[in-house]
Length: 168
Image (cartoon, rainbow, N blue to C red; front, side):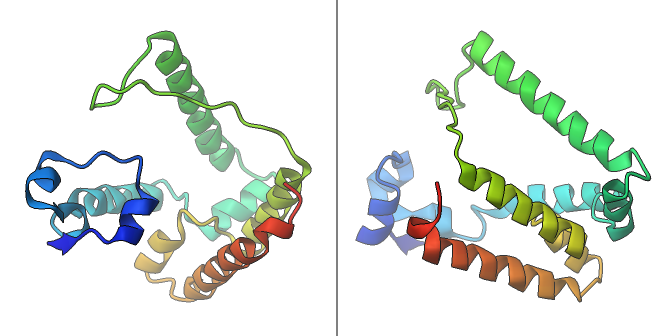
């Protein structure tokens, strides 16, 4: 078990400690066993990506060349499920497992999202992968994708470094 540092506490100040944390003062969320369920969901998610050919460079290239409906069907069905889910959450006033209300804040438009979307799309078209399937591609044995993963990490770091100077 790990002790919660003041830095971690300030990062998650709005998070309520669990009963175990209240009584022991320890954070069990950092242990490997506590995070096992997330790893298992990630593994299943990766297997679904591989079996559905969502991580296939060729499928992604087909999509950008408008040669196949496969990826548009996958993305379109994900958007439809997301829209339906948001509609039901708002309509039925669904709460979290802890019973707290779910608040969906409206998104604001700014030109930086256009620039970011174009950069993301260009990177996706060039590398054949968005950040989601990178780990599934590496797990499938396509080790050259490690270059793409390192590039995604570098891009994320650069964004964080220049964030205050970018158009938002």
